[in-house]
Image 1 (tube, one colour):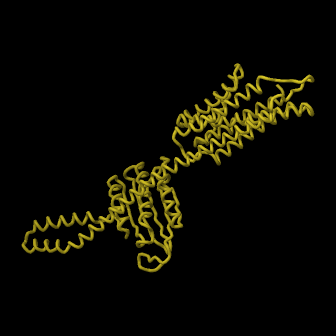
Image 2 (cartoon, rainbow, N blue to C red):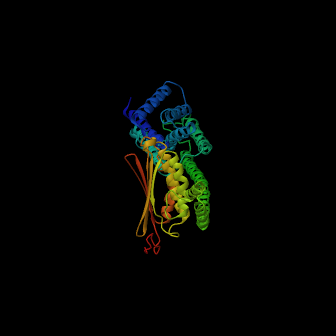
Length: 442
C-alpha cells in the first residue's frame, strides 16, 4: 500500500473525530473519551463491512448515520427524532464537503496530468485534507451561528430533514452516475474533461449553501417558537399579576372598612362587658381576632400589592414545610412599578419553591431581604437546593423575566450557588428625587 493512500485513509478516519464532537455538542452533550472510542469502533466496523461488500454511497451514508443515531439514543439519551436529525446533519456535512471537492479534484487532476504527473498521487491527499478542513469549518459555523437556540417540536424538525435528504440524493446521483460510472480517456491515455466540472462544482456549491439556508430557517423557526412560548408565559404572568393587584386592592378596601367599623365593634364589646356577659364578650372578641388575622399580612413590606402576593405565597410555602424568613421594605409608591415588583417576587419565589421541593423537609428554607442604599435597591432571595439536581430554579423563563425588569431599571441580576444554598440578587436603580422609607430625599 503506497504512502498517499495511507495518508488519505488516515485523514478520512481523523475526520470522524470532529464529526462526533459536533454531533455531541449539537445534541447538548459532552463527547467523553469512552463515547468517542465507541463511535470509532462502530464506524470502523461499518468501514470493514463496506470494504468486503459491493455497496454504493447510499448504504455507506445510511450506516454512518445509523452509528451516530444509535449513540445519540443509547448513550446520550436523546429523543429519537432529535438524534436522527443531528445524525443526518453530521453525515450530511461530511458528504457535502467531500462532494464539493470532487469537481475540484477532477479539474486539478486534468491540469496536473498535463504538467506534473508525478504530483497526481498526492492530489488525493490534498483534496482529502481540504475536505476535512471544510467540514470542520462547517461544524463551527453551525454551532456558533445556526444551531437552534432551544429544543423545538418534532414536527418542525421535518422542515430540516426532508430538504437535506433531497440534497443528499442529489449528491449521491452526482457521485455514482457522473463521477462513479464513466471514465473517458484520450488517445494518449489522459482523462478528458467531458464532465462539466465547473457546472457540477456550481451545483455542489448551491447544495452546500442550501444546507446552511435550511439550518437558518430552522433557527428562525426555533426563535419563533421560543418567542411564542415566551409570549404565552408573559400573558399568563400578566393575568396572574393583575389578579394580585385586584386582590391587594380588595384587601386594602376591606382593611379600611374594618378600621372604619372598629369603634362600633368596641362599643358592642364594651356593652357585653358592662352587662357582665363574659362568654358573649369572649366569643365576640374571638370573631374580631379572626377578622383581624384575615386582613393581616405575614410580611409587611410597605407595599400593599407585594404584601398580598407574599401573604398568598408564604402561607403555601409554610404549608409545604418550607421555613420562610422575610425582611423587606419597599420604596414608596411610584419608585418601582407594582407590576414589575410582582414579576420579581412571584418568579423568584416560584423558582425557590421548585428548588426546595428537591430538598429534604428539615433543610427547606427561603429567605427574602431587601434594602435601599442611596439610589439603589437590592432584593436578595436565598433558598436551599439539591446540588445533585440540575434544575435548581435558577434558570428558564422566570429568571429571564426578572432580568427584563432589572434591565428596565438599569440594574442587574446575579446568581450564586454555594454550600447547597442558591442566592439570587436583583439590583434596581431608583429614580432620583424619590424619598426613601425614612423620608429623606435620594
